[in-house]
Length: 415
Image (cartoon, rainbow, N blue to C red; front, side, top):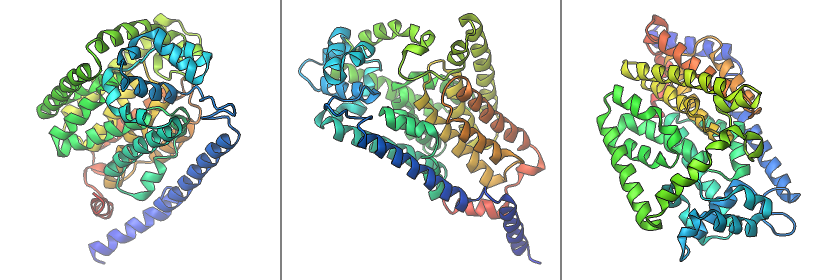
């Protein structure tokens, strides 16, 4: 029997053994989940329990302050963005006093205004749809570039953080999409990948590990591009929205430091290791100690992995998932980043073969994200990092050192 026919028989046998874990059944299940999400959103719209209330008042969701910020940014006095009293009054007028008392200022670096500025030209409802569609396309484009299969794109819309991000109208898709595209292009086009990383500085808490990983991997072009883009982005924002933008945002962020220890009062729960431990009654000092210990271990693991000649997909998976673990300031919608890490994991699995119980564990993590509260998301992130470490360790053995010929060629056809 020829080697080619033997390889086909082996691949066919593996697909039969995998059963549910093949592209067709997974794709069909993913379509069912997405249709369920669409039905749930449509039902909420019909009942006027989401987006717009029967009296015409906007729902108090995160998109409320995003849309309001875009309006204030393009007004004759953009400085009101950074005045808590003025911003709170505008939010009260838009979505009621409860919303005004919670959103008391623009809480992002002024560079984020470049992403949302066009929304100010649109009515609230149109802007929400445009924002969700545009950022969703960036997110799905990143997944497709990582794993160019239609089933992967559909599956990327099924994790619960995706629905949570739509319900809130937040920027989880944009963050995950920019991170995924940056990681892909870091290997192929370093200057472009670094520039996208510079754009991601509107959420600086997710960039803690990137300089460390790029330094140990000697990715100097990526670092230079990221630094140049960040500085240019920041200076342009100060010119466009006023020199007071940066001092005002630093002052506001100092005042928001206490939010990490007041999770019951915020609309969206924090899901970091520190906040998860603190929310179940563990003292702040112990919670910080555990968080910093885990973050230090994850940082060391990511640096070791990026310093070694491991498969790039595993490096990218570790860096994206690790960026969620190390920061104490991560909310439910930010967990969309985990999908990027899983896409890189699956990419490596398709090229080198999956390990026993690996796909079942990933499916269990997907199901666990429906409990998007307490320590569950943090545990899931650590479990996914464990899968990365396991694959990296096995890459040195015969089982994963040589890519499977049929799966490797099938994966290359889509790249």
